[in-house]
Amino acid sequence: MAQISTMPGWTFSQLNKLRKQQPELVDKALADMMQSNQELRWSLVLTAYLDEEINLGKAAELLGLSELELRERFIELGVPLRLGPADLVEAQAEANALRTWMADK
Image (cartoon, rainbow, N blue to C red):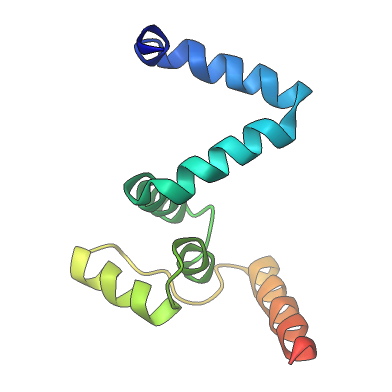
């Protein structure tokens, strides 16, 4: 097993191939890894947020925090906040999410 850990490129390549054949197996393993490794989860979510792949609300959800808690942490860490929708598509998505949320209440 130690030999595999010294070959991360090979490991990622094999996981990618395996995911095409057995997506449930790989997705569960990755979800378990994210759940058990808080530092990894934080780093991946922060990177996705900084790359504008997710918004503050989604980042908070993935980290199990309220949006306000995450906003405060980001301020403490000097992470730039992106508040409000960036464009019309994002605004519509937020409005749809709010309508869905309200319908569930």
